[in-house]
Image (cartoon, rainbow, N blue to C red):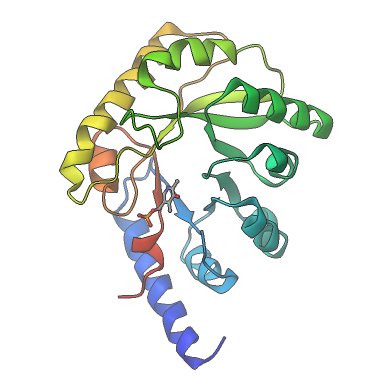
Length: 226
Ligand SMILES: *Cc1c(COP(=O)(O)O)cnc(C)c1O
């Protein structure tokens, strides 16, 4: 770290404190740490951020041993089959489960580790062909199919939503995801808990919180010194 980095550390630290202070207390802030270095993550952790999100297993592999159990580690990217074993070991929550195949592999790896993994079901709320996630109309049968796995536990939902410049344009997708979340909560499927609703990024998190998000994932806003 050079002198300049020291200044940036303080900027990032201050910005993170400011954001944390403004969030409603029931909302968990996940720092989306992709492409960030360990000192940048340390700066937000010193400000009080305790949940760190990674999109890439390889990046997390370099960072987690250094920071360890001081943080709760969320996987927020697309999990490739050949990375499931490592992800099962390193993460506390996988936010992006969207196929039975992935759930089956994850359950098997967690079983070997004697670990129960909290997972969120990723919803493709924008019905975008290019995006991962379960389509809104397929969520209920998908979730029902996960109820008998012993080593993964569904505890909520995550959505990206289409990327919009104007956060108001993201609102309908958050509203739809919230409705699915609430309807599944009412159904009371055994072994399925609807506790976490992860939606909203730097440009849209305020709207997402208004629509019921209790996990927001922030990268740009948190890490970019202003
Ligand atoms: C990068 C990323 C974020 C954070 O995005 P920003 O716009 O930088 O806040 C949130 N969620 C996921 C899945 C991401 O990949």
